[in-house]
Image (cartoon, rainbow, N blue to C red; front, side, top):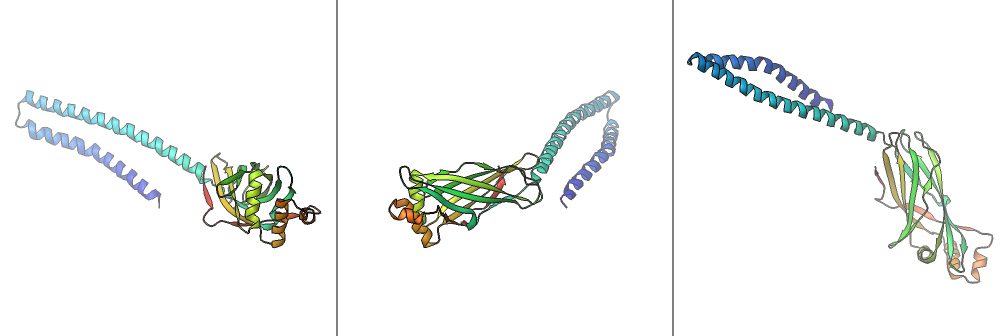
Length: 260
């Protein structure tokens, strides 16, 4: 259906061009006959010369339109090539669940810290291959942001395949106090994820989403509180080096997919 207007325009242009080959000579002969009947021979020759000069002007106009047509063809070919490159669009998604996100190994003295560990499953939702896959992520709450190290998938995703990217990042200083305070109060912090990848033509695409992370169980909140307080309860709560799982939930309206 999309090709129909283009074919119609092309056929119309061909018809008009062919008609001009018949109409223009006919009109010239008619004008010459009508005017030369009432003119002397030298005046008739002058009239014919005037028609010739007028025809030369139309020749220049024709050259102008030919140049514009060539330019239009070049633009069309460029747009078609660009459209073909962008039509090969992989679509990756990052998936998190409670078994893949945890806080562990707290250090309650000095510069307090705790380690965030996450396993993100990266899956391709379409048949187009995705290359050079990079995950950028940020932990944030009320303007406080912690940029996590960029992580890469070691292999491309060919078609509807999946892979796993692991994050292992310490949370220290003001981030430690702020984030743990929110989690132990039952409030969420946010994990902003952005996956950047390329299609086979080298065009870059991005899929992004924000997850809200919460600590849902009282026993786990108490464990985080013990890490914050550095009191006698710490050794009891953290003996045998346990981990505190976090529950991720995609934040409504944050899924985006676009060309980088």
